[in-house]
Length: 64
Image (cartoon, rainbow, N blue to C red):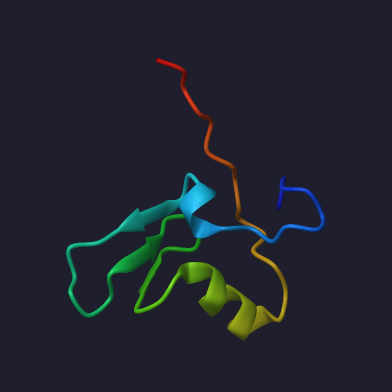
């Protein structure tokens, strides 16, 4: 569910499911799909499915 505008692809850095792991071999993680990777999860999703990430949920910015 890419809630970004159609001309801008989903970015893991903007997703609530994205996290950095403590695993030096697989530093990037995706909670939506339950995997860790050596590169940003969006690249793994696109490589496996040929489509944009369906699990993308934009982070909400909380004003200070």
